[in-house]
Length: 429
Ligand code: PMP
Image (cartoon, rainbow, N blue to C red; front, side):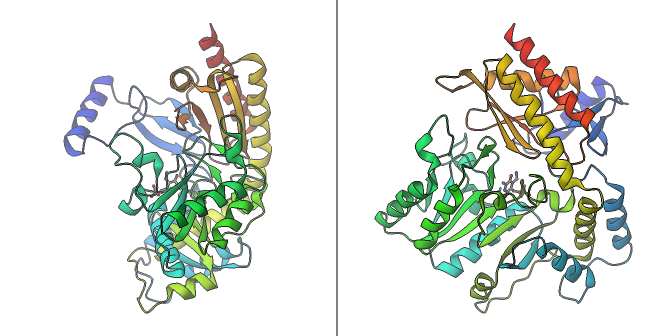
């Protein structure tokens, strides 16, 4: 256990060694010392239900994943320029989860690296100089991706939209119904790019919009967009860094809910259950186009330890039926949270697929004005009184994201619904 004074001292020491923009979560920072399953434990012993961390997908410190990584770490860890069966076994098992067109994988170490490599592939494969992204999108912290992330370039400290980036409006059915027609939005963007004298390399889109506010894409949205982008010579990139690996329940990848096959898929976070491993999956045609004489080398990408961890994550999802659990628990949460709309006018919308859910708070259901202050209060109430972590996001900071490890139980989900009910009741007084 650590006292408040010790924790204040930790904050000061942390501030002394880190740059000032490494911020901590919550009004009063938490000292978390252990994770197990869907729970995190603070230094004072308090157990928290983690509905923020979609990285520790099969559960924090899952014994099977930890054992696989530790065993391999004790035997060999080196770069991928030697033959090693872990890389081949995992590559095969991972690609078997994709539609057959997506048959080539590159292993990297973070979602940002995956999206940056995807941009390189798209540039080489198309010769294009312009990229299309969604409003509010975040694709990573590398220089190339801050430029592709309105979430960053439009926020404090950002320098605004670069000329080579074109932004599609969020397909939010209440705020902007016209933005929900992928074919029409795509046609307009293609015309804008042409008018600017540019050529499209890639269209990046998360298969469910995350940082933009947990927005489920309307039916046919990606099909319409993809047709337009491909018609203009661009490739399509599904960013599955948050949504992949069975979280949506009905499918292993969220792009599958849209009935499309992207040219490139980027994956990360849940892939290593907390261990830094990520990937880019693409078609043979794109991979061959990228093979332009320059060697591809990545010191850590595809190392035997990361591959052992990745394999153990896939095995755990299968052995524990976690994709099916995402369906059942996702339905339970959606039903329970959606019922709160009838009780509290400030709940504007409850949406999601599987265990990727958003609760949008508004000042008024007619105008759909964002209520970021209410969302902030709900986060703190739920954390303090119910010991559950949820986080706010979206352009108005008013969408509460619920995306727990996919091993959550019925009792956990009941607790989440009761916590929201209580927090909204407290706020409505
Ligand atoms: N894409 C999406 C959709 C993300 O949410 C993130 C991380 N929040 C990234 C890419 C970048 O991943 P990483 O932090 O592993 O570099």
